[in-house]
Image (tube, rainbow over all chains, first blue to last red; front, top):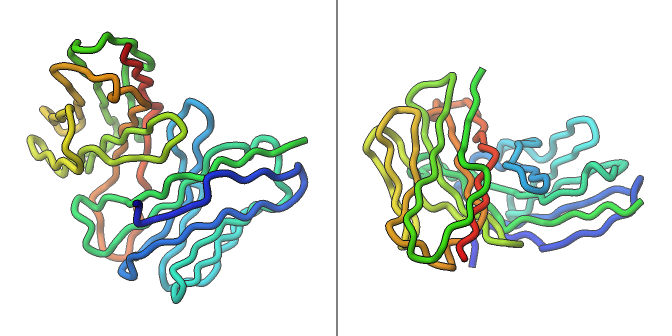
Length: 113
Length: 116
């Protein structure tokens, strides 16, 4: 199994809030990221949080980090149809060879009008 | 500004044929480079990464190989494709890490490979 885990699918109605959850196992993680992948495209960085932070807000996006439980979440306020995509969380471990990121399996978010 | 290119965008190849996917990065030097595969409906699997010319690290044993003949060029190859090689291949780059700085990992547009 993967070291970073996410639920596979989330359905939300337009205008509601979406919450995407992620759990990781490595306590040495320094940065945690959220990426968005639209259909047929590469990944784009949405936001990130440093491991000594509990929360980060960026417009409609709120990232919450519970380091004790190794739980990361992304909340999207006022979800729009354009938010339909796959969302990946990723962690950067302190001594990751090649500075590689470890990605979760992705959560497919479907926004219904 | 930095850009990352991948080609081809789509590819249909028969089983047993060779493969060469190319990735090039512009606007940076000495980046870390990465090849990922995304199978249909699945997450990202890191295949290879490279910290410099000629330096390749393999993450999983497989039918594929990678090379970095130039600083900003990363090539994914196979001598004989298998059906299980089908997927969406993503190249990514990242600047070398410096203490206290966060560096984004930038992804290319991807190549969709179908092995028939």
